Length: 331
Image 1 (tube, helix red, strand yellow):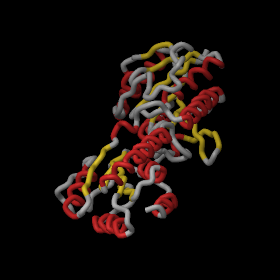
Image 2 (cartoon, helix red, strand yellow):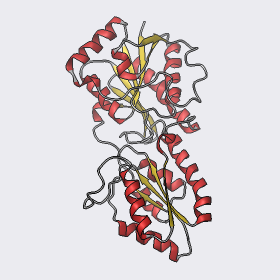
Image 3 (tube, helix red, strand yellow):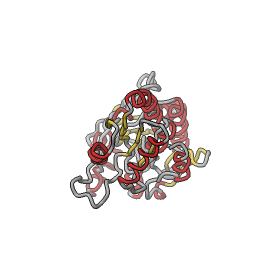
Image 4 (cartoon, helix red, strand yellow):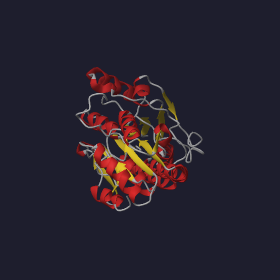
């Protein structure tokens, strides 16, 4: 009998529970045993493992986060930890791992694959930065939250004639800012893939004012960098929102407010789209194991359900600049 172990690693995202559920249900269908690993790779190395049954995954489809818990970091930078992992898999008679996580954890899965550890992976991150995916589990839920937040801000921003600076997540890419801002009617979107000057932002605000629009909502991804010549701000996250706030306040006739959406983007129930995506990818992950296709990531890429070799995942997926050009039409 095959025995599969499933874990979630790294930052949580809405829809991970739906993926866990899909893996377990399809595995049961094939008469495989399923082991749940608590708290990611850290829990796996501490043998925090339990037998799952249909009751374990009952009712978890609409739940945010992960029932298994998670942990961050790569414990396998030390060679002996890989040997420990192999011993644990042998001890528990685990024939394959299913790793659910973001870009860094697809890279770790690839590392383990090269060490002859049988596994498949499922891309789950709000950042949508994993290559060879049309979208990742949790991304749609995150941008829907951003869009709804901007919807609410429009009414108060226009009533008080304010400039709102809204910081969103993104993991070093601009997908959340771009797609959340585009769908939420942002008046300016700043992404890490581009550089900006304060003059450009001032001109934008003044242009809107001259056209009779007495408010602005500016979305900035957390890793957008202040101009390099400015040395009073470090490269830490959240500096961009403070940098913009300080400078715009002192050079703008409008009242300025700042809002960091933060981890609210990760929380809550997954969208319908994320539930379906997670279900498809979870089911396919087990089918790949059944076919003996290890060392792959379950994905929907260019509209097709497929398995992507983990060794192909090298760089983060950057934003589509054509979409940014479309967003600019509405500034």
